[in-house]
Length: 413
Image 1: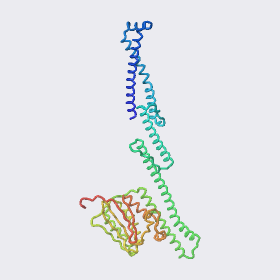
Image 2 (image 1 turned 90 degrees about the vertical axis):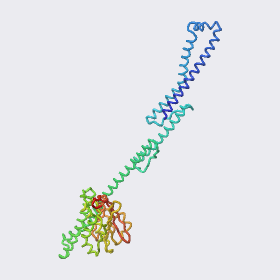
Image 3 (image 1 turned 180 degrees about the vertical axis):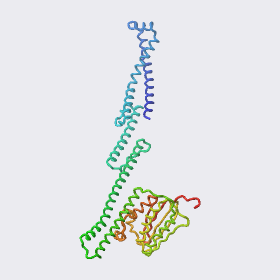
Image 4 (image 1 turned 90 degrees about the horizontal axis):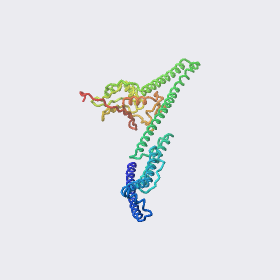
């Protein structure tokens, strides 16, 4: 835009210079003609003039003189314009190289002066915006990713600033994810170390008593051996759960096939009958008449729902029932496993699926929990593309899982 205005301004300036040169040339020629008319009346000075008129002619003399005068005046009047235009062009070339801090001097109030002033305004705006972008980049380089560079709409540099902001946000997320992964790894190592050391310390303590013959009789010996054995079983369960958890989260391949959830949960409820009878409880399966099918690895889902039903029996025996509700809604298979025992404290609900988290430490120790059961369940549900959530109040505690429904076959519709 500035270049186009500069071209139009130069064209207008040179037109003015052209007209001015013609006018000055005509004025000088007119004055020369008047002077010649005056000189020709004086014999002392008119000899060269008369000779020129007689031998060359007045018209050729005026043409040659007019041409020479026009060139002289054109050069004389256009020189400042050319010099100023060259200065503007040179400064704009510096701007094109990125040096926006070099202003164009405003030497005239005319069109060229306005162009120079406008170019200075544009350069100052660009320079200020580049300084803002540069400052933002320095802040980002210091790790202050929350700093946003102002984005000016309709501006190419604004697009650059927006891209930098997106890059900064993505980099911030990546760094946070890396830090979270590092923290997760450290927490996992800490949790594993603590949960392995506790039973192992007990086992070593009782074995040391046996090794040093610090028992009264065979009955006390068998008592020590039994405690060490029980602790070893707990240690094995923890190692098995830990191995299963890491295997699932490291992308263990799934054997996906069509699975009818109605039949799946009826069979699973049958397998829990002995545990339910020992607890004085009953499992009720509420399923629709039509099959609810998903694509899943049945063996993995058994492991996930075994954890939920086992917990419902352990902590909900006061309610006498474990209810499993199956339904299909908006292309999702929804399964709820509910018990009616003591509610889970509200402060524990957001953390209940975390590794090694136990709602009640003493109760978990009594029931032999490793703190990995619900974390394993969550991982299994999620690798199947599902979700799990929990609600708990004085009336009931429900674990809800959802999965995408498998496409029905024509004969099932």
